[in-house]
Image (cartoon, rainbow, N blue to C red):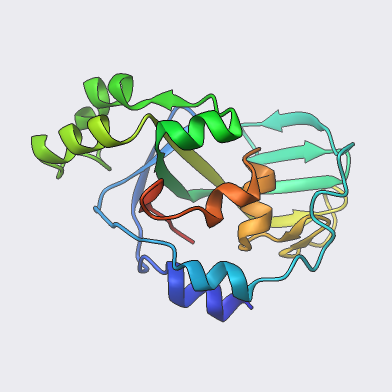
Length: 188
């Protein structure tokens, strides 16, 4: 399953990034699009959505982990994703993320958007209502000092199901058409 995801979402290796607040900003300008067939090929192997009581207990910025009821999720500080969604998706899923009109005012200041021209910003602002930044996890462990793995109670840390759960977005949003959900950057 991982190879299917990698081939459809691969943005390349050798990523260099700057950490700014809660977001990672990439020096390069990769643009990836999710392939609809990728979603059909994936299975919900881990009972995703069954752990409604899995609550965030702590975020430790110094040690790069999120502690949930189910264990420790170790942040991947060198990976983040950005997707744009239309107003139709905002309404359908009741999304509350950064508005594109606000994003476009300051985006050019950050490394991951500096290579984009005015036409790009204008198009994103006119076509899409919100931008959603997605954070990623590199490992999971049941205990802080326990053995780490990529298998979690919510799926493999690279699976779309897990990324949706971890970022509190509906998994179904990632299956919407490219006209309504544009993946500007998806990095593993």
